[in-house]
Amino acid sequence: QASIAPNAQSTARSPGWQRPGHSKTMGGDGATQFPGQLHDHMTKAGFVFRGGRYFQTTEPVWEKAKRIEKGKKQYAVPATSVEQFLKDEEKMVDARLKRYRDKAGLKGDASDNELEEAPKKKKKETKVEVEEEAEE
Image (cartoon, rainbow, N blue to C red):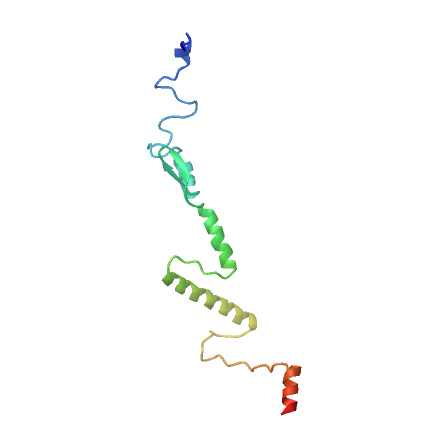
């Protein structure tokens, strides 16, 4: 039914045929599609090489770093464990207290022994409270 064109064998891909600009050893070890630097960039971008293709499985490293920096500006404490969180939180709070004490012109460290209670401000009396006192 379908006949083979006389020049079909000349256009068919032979076992040694490759796309121009590509070689079998382009990645070097066969476990990667791209050369070393580009493969490293792809893995940092969240891609995994499986079955001859790259698949995105995670977010890029730089996006995660950007999110962490944004969180730090909002006084969040990024951590991978509870112990790390507690340690980093203490460092952050100490740094903030030191900065605020310097800004206020106070000297020394902020220890519990040095702190004095600030005088409590009186609440403004409302009409209801004034009327209750007048009735008594």
